[in-house]
Image 1 (cartoon, helix red, strand yellow):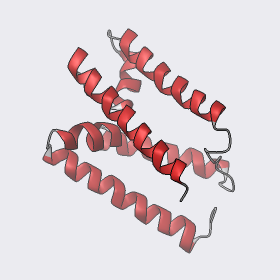
Image 2: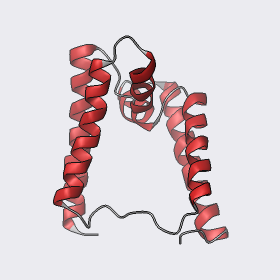
Image 3: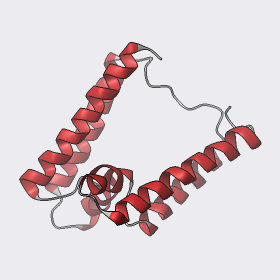
Length: 141
């Protein structure tokens, strides 16, 4: 592990925490990205949601621009499998009433039992999925 990876992780995690606190403090909203994305299309409060999503895309794009080799592009995954995976993630977000940002960052910081259970389920399934696809099936080792 490179020391820059540690710095990037600390800075990125701090920025996520600051943005979650800022959103809660200014608008009283939880920074759950899946909920923000969904409501950006079907809500009357679109402006702040769209700005939040633009901020996510802009900061990620800027990071990638200034550190071009740092974010590895996924290779070796069949396109159909990626599409199916996206559908499963969307289904999981709907069933869990939120995503890892809403439950894992905002929910856990509020000591929500429901968010603790959701986050444990998210990560347990991620570990199982990784094991099955990489170790058992050999897809994108």
